[in-house]
Amino acid sequence: MSRLLTCLALCLCVSAGLAFDADAADLANPLAYAPPVVARSLISEIRSGVFAHALGTHEDGSVDINGEILFSKPILPADPLMAFLVPRLHLGTTINTAGDTGQFYAGFTWTYDITPKVFIEGSVGAGFHTGETGRFRVPDRLSLGCSPLIRGTGSVGYRFSENWSIMATVEHISNANLCHANQGLTNYGVRVGYTF
Image 1 (cartoon, rainbow, N blue to C red):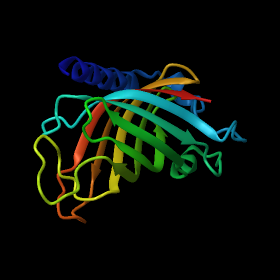
Image 2: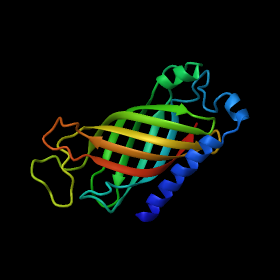
Image 3: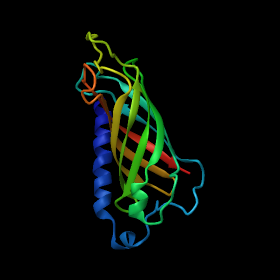
Image 4: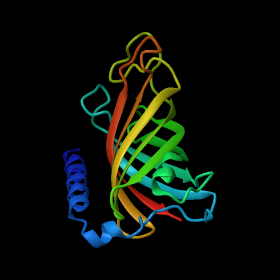
């Protein structure tokens, strides 16, 4: 588990360093991922990665496998700022390898290019989970109150090429005190993306 956290911290440091190391020529060029005039396919990107599961909670100590599909934007503004405001629809799943809480989720993703290589991202949506929703606490499990929950993520990423990227991601699901229990679940990890 400590190796996964060290890898995550290293990815964040490298991404942050690359953001500040971009030269003036890169900043003057059009963004690498400015939306195309016509979407290349229905699916924009696929992602896969691993998360450290629920650090510091009753479910700490295991690993999640994550997979996600992002769809092309329904409209494709040419202006990079306007392109940011139009989200991509995403569908995904986070499966726990130890039988703890997993989830299937859907929502919207916004990506902003800091440089042609470095980007930040946020998403919001709903997560349907396999965790505990009862009023009585189950040992070694989180009490999440109800399902679905509100799911949000934040990522910092780096593009190796037009197609391949890596990102450090934090994902969180919570009921925002809409149910009787609201312990919430936060996972930290690294994902690799392939853009079509």
